[in-house]
Length: 267
Image (cartoon, rainbow, N blue to C red; front, side):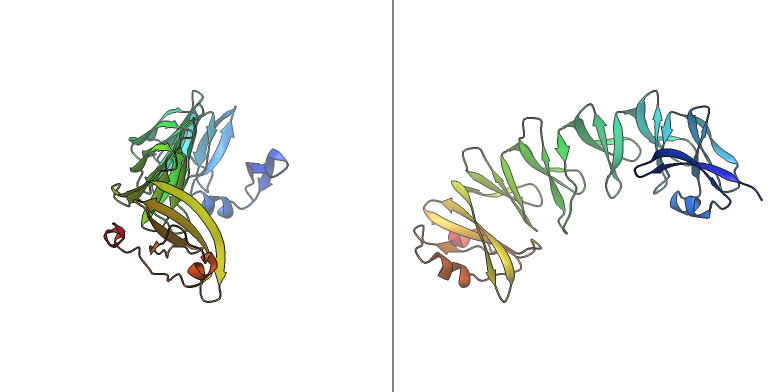
């Protein structure tokens, strides 16, 4: 029986050499090719032990979605199964970001590229979050902690010039240092500007569960936005600036699937 030796990265153990008689589990996890080491360099073999990609890389990861991350001359890039470069080896790190987009790192700064080395965002961001919770966008921020918004295709929706962002299903609230706020739609257009933004509080109702309320002011009118835990339901409503019965207001706050037009709230 043929025996195979695999270098595995075990939790709390680091890299160790293990012996196997069956490589089916490793092959299924790495799309038919497994990483192997020869004299300190890494390449890829198939399940029969045949060399498919010669060991020319200083480090190598398993194949996923037709590509693998490899390290060459101390820089990371990506190759396909024919050992052709998909992303140039010029990055300090590389990882999957969202769908077919990759996140690359140069020093401490991050950017986004698409397969075939198409640059989407230059590596100038300190952090790029991933879209999550059913949202189609995520937060980015620079080294000086200026925040912005990027969508799942890597398009900048709001430039990194804000101190705070609140991401909803169809709207993003971006707050300036002086607490004024811009309201963006998913196309990157500012649909409304507000004089003041403030964070409200959590409240619970038996029919809807726990929500969080944000308040926005413009021209003396106050707009309340209540967010469901899934961030899929919001409401806009004009209320008096000096609301006395705050709990009564929250108790009767109607929730709708989409934010109504702000035209009705303008004075």
